[in-house]
Image (cartoon, rainbow, N blue to C red; front, side):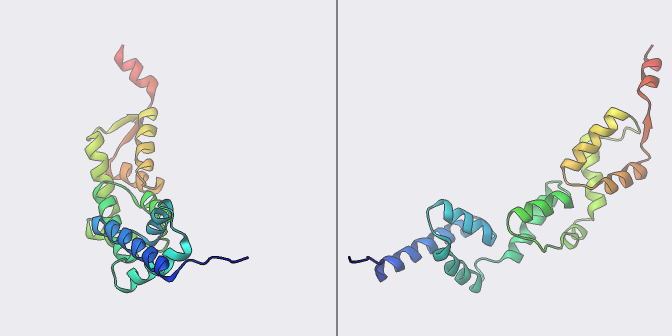
Length: 172
């Protein structure tokens, strides 16, 4: 019984197809290595045939995880997201060793970003009920800011927690 192997021309054509897809993707925006692998897998390419192509792209500096990370972090900071969320999103994209603080410092630091996000959404009210305090804290945590950062923000803004029954008595 004769086994068929892909001809050399088919392998070359396949490599050219992978390169074309990679170049189209990279022309639009930066992609991490894992993003390219995943997108190519969705298009039916095997990881074995994709790896050498992506390696070649990285050697020519068309694909660069460091450059991708810098662009991604800068964009997410501008969108008002904190370090916890950005780090998680990068891990989902195959980036595990990003130094987010450098990018944050270039844009004023995490605490200033947190203040901007908070002020943009809530203004400068200084007395909050426990439910409102928790609601605002949850929002900020979902944006990727740690509990310690939020606690410092509340202290910096001198936001006080008021009892809900005090609000009801003053409303009567």
